[in-house]
Image (cartoon, rainbow, N blue to C red):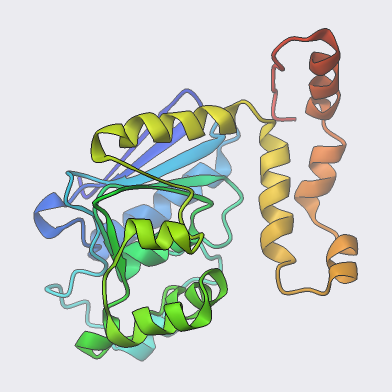
Length: 257
């Protein structure tokens, strides 16, 4: 199976499973990722997802260039789904996603990282967008997102040289939430996952939706922008439960409604 998918304790675990190809994405795994993200979005029992790669060498080395998809670059560009979560682009997902970066994150691998909300990386991980070295361009969000998330010249330097950047450098620029020794990676991911699960799921979806959909707006327009997820969170039973739990000095029991 090119992508493993398992749900336990309200957490979806998604693992790119092609370690012999540095977890590069071929047509089958691209399609399967789209199916998985669609299922994650449709299931209220899933409160967050963790995305990683099999093995300890690579998170994902991007597209599998040994595969002939039959598509030209222009055809692929035009085929990218406007839904934003088909395949490797995660920009429009409402479910919180943690990237567990265990090794190289290149090309589409880095673009998947850019679509996640929280990024935990091994200190041995390295990141890059090497498309220009093979006559390609970062179509799945790299050209648009990286200059918004990093200082412009750092982003342009990465894209225009294809150089690999170590995890500690990207942590310094604010792209990563935490960088830990490889042997502590799972513990750190578990800590972040537990913190997400301790929060109201509808609140997390509202925060993500408002933050992403209003990022390009003027402040006043952003404050007034109607977001369905925000209204759902404000009118939810969980909104009352959270306050009641605080007053009773107990842990909240979230229903997701």
